[in-house]
Length: 268
Image (cartoon, rainbow, N blue to C red; front, side, top):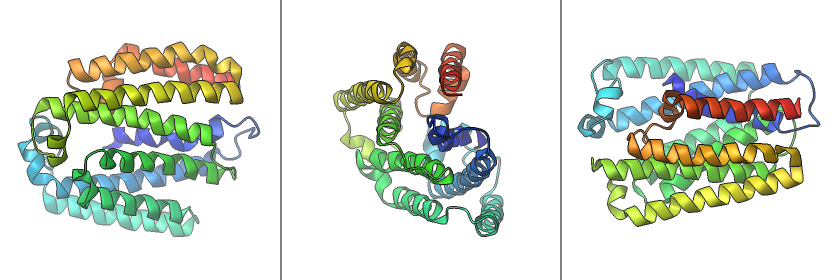
């Protein structure tokens, strides 16, 4: 699931949004941590897919998309790859003195999610969101700065927005493979989605005001992305796969790159 490695680009956020950090001295270290954390995420994905194999086979989309569910790879092959990745990651952590506390914390958090919290309404989304805050903080640790509270709040609320849309898409598909969906309603999920979007916009404005006012020019693009992402996720039924939503829609992808380009130009 290498496409999902894109989520780990959050590791670079503290570097990008920090005017006191100049040059490219930290980029190699950040890339090494990005690669190592992506391997950790792949380990978690394999464990999750092994755990959910039977339910994925009953899912209208996942039974065709996931390699274990559709029979592309066998369970034994997945276990071999899992062993190789764990061995390689262990080597990277100890040889390069990586931030094992962040790695261990994220792994334990995801194991808790996979085996217990996944079926608990709302708490499952909150737990997953914490994983993205770990990504941001590990990037801060690499460049030896404290994570910006404003940036943490922006990331947290944006992730909530995306994940609640994912739950809404699962709810609408009526696959009924996730027990927690039985406790959601269309009204509740829409309320959570809209609330997350509003808080994200408010925290973004707060961040812009106190960090760099000229970033206000990105706000219309951010709002447009929120609206378009919501519409595409629901209408095209892609909300269960956030990365696919961005990749497959050229306008959304272009607009996202434009936002990133503006940010990079303003900071560098």
